Image (cartoon, rainbow, N blue to C red; front, side):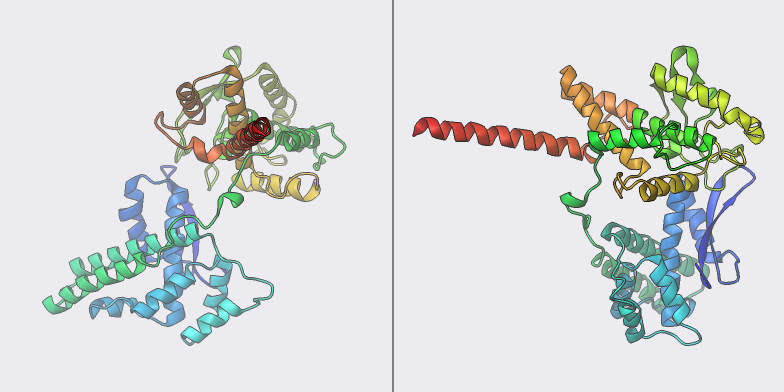
Length: 425
């Protein structure tokens, strides 16, 4: 964040990616770093999750700076936050990080009072009323509560506080934790109308037309970029895998004579040069490849990837067009942004993860047509998606299919009841 704190991911010699908070001088902050190492990293959480935790901690430190609170002094005196400050903190957790950066810059040399904090909220109200999703605000508050409790516990164990002060601090921690809990938003702020769904058959057809390397509407000029992007989207759409899983695939993971690809888990791989390593969040698994997808993949490797000299120094399938380095998550984000901006016929909400939802809708339809039992369908889907055999995650990925199926049943029921009414006349 400009002129303030920021989270940076460092790559250790072992290959582990470790996010840390840097202070205004660009140095790692001691307490948040120890907290991340002892309380978060030890739970084997992904680097991206540790980053989310630390961004929540960063919000808390921005709050302390904005209010001019010397938190170490409060801990020493057995105090934490007043109820008014907890309320203020909860409101702050609903703001985007860009708004919080503005709050940090407003402070200058004097602490912000409540009125000043409200000015930040009201600033440019005509053009900006954005708040983060309630789930994000809830996550921030939970991690801040966890950080507060850890700070207090560390202070109690390392400082010789008088018994009365230690007792007061312990009680204050409990009360503040309860106050934070009572202000955590429960449930998602998104209703059923705003939840992510897969795309329709018409949108899929238009997407495939636009990304065809020979299409006049293809938004990219470079031949490698055209063929790579088309192949990547085909992998996401045809296999239903995550972006991180696709970017982690190596040429050696593909067994051509079996028409298979193995989706591996390679967290903190020291051979991966990307600072923000694409991750496989689900289980490792072997996926079948159609002859068409395999042939397209082999053609990309032989005709386009091989033309980039640096690509010969590593085995990752998808590579950057100019450098030949392994393709990054940021590049994929840019790819979908260009698709949305340059192809007005495509939905504004088109993303790589939407294609995973689209695959699940198509899978449900195919299972229905084949007459597969619900239990067998669930097991097959869980395997192909890399979920636990007992997972109920499918409900998140099949909203469009369920909605269309419900519509079909509802209309059929209406017609049936209407016809019955006519017969009774």
